Length: 254
Image (cartoon, rainbow, N blue to C red; front, side, top):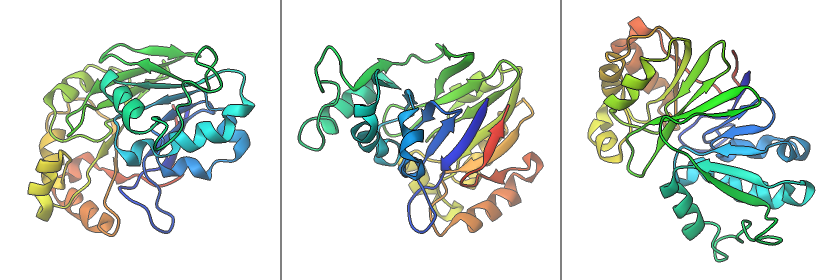
């Protein structure tokens, strides 16, 4: 299993891209601005998008993706998400006002886009790869995802603040190899992080104290212009876990 980081920033500018991960050639985990760097041929190969939550930096490329390549495909693109997230996409994005409803185009019977609700803890196996929604704690309903090749697992937390349920699930993953966890704010912005339900380095350290499994840890969703400062604060408080800043185009094979 191969996971390529298309975007991992909390914003845009220059080479920064918002959250999106490409699993092999056919599955996206979130669909931020990084999806736009793929070729049209690569876009046409994507069959599934697993969405962590409804915020724009994680879903912004879905409308452009289906509009660009939906006509080239012989089956619909499937968006997997919590029922609450699907409801937001239907009401506020694919609503004929902000964007056409591709779940009705060209016909409701043969659309270019379909929705598939996910359930916490219930994995879906696609070509030997099992993708399981995990708990998250954000300002809107949200999940993280476990990606399991059978040989090893990678956990992506998505956007979350403190979440004991998440770590209880992660600690049960016997083949855990990689952990991608967000830290959006600096310690000086701790109150904002709490209010926005993100992590700062101090909160991250508290969460990692709950982790009982060994894993390579990567930090994502850092605010543009603050990445080096946030990583410095992380390494001051969480050095024994050896976290690394996730980079655009990083590739995991597991």
